[in-house]
Length: 89
Length: 147
Image (tube, rainbow over all chains, first blue to last red; front, side, top):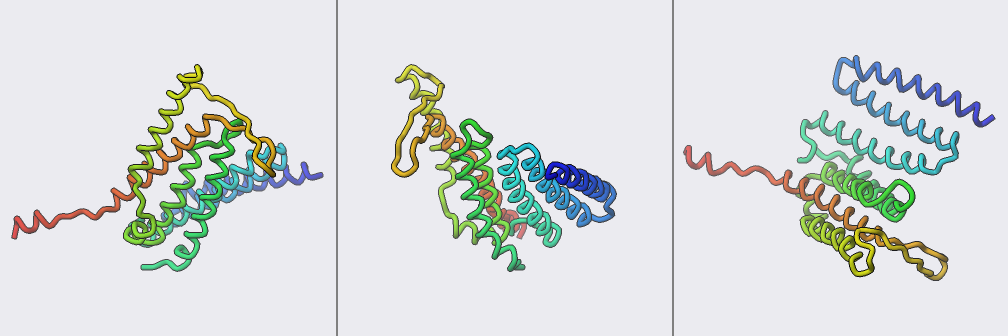
């Protein structure tokens, strides 16, 4: 039962990442691409969590925490760069 | 311009990264983890302070000798390998078992000291590069020559 749900969620997240890649490649402006990259990172976090459920490996949870912190910092730095043109003042 | 949201969140994220990096540092003997990724996580949390506040504020909050971090870290890593000469396990890891109260049996490897050295190198190099990049360029000499 849980395995079926995980399978369905994996396909949904994969489809979402594919759509985000389309926006990343086509996006007319830079903020579009940044939001798409952040969306990919968030979906990847969910993908890792689902892998952790599917395989029962604890390692994926550690990867989830690391990826969450890194994607947050990357998005914050991107946003500041787009807004100010300078990361560290 | 001050971003209130980022300045509120950045110290909290620093705590999270420090806790997680300590976990990775202690975890990485048989599992993924270790000094390098732990140092990177710490450096990410510290770099975020420089991003959220400005360089002066970051310098004021974390005015630490980053050069000494990587100097002593590299020395410690080299020392762990050379110390094996005494016990006949040159560049190898020795294993001890400690019995601290309340926790039970704890495996200790000498490779952990190597990991601590790598941690110091990664944090020190990253922060030293950041601090030295943030020093503002001084161009008063050219102007004075032209004037």
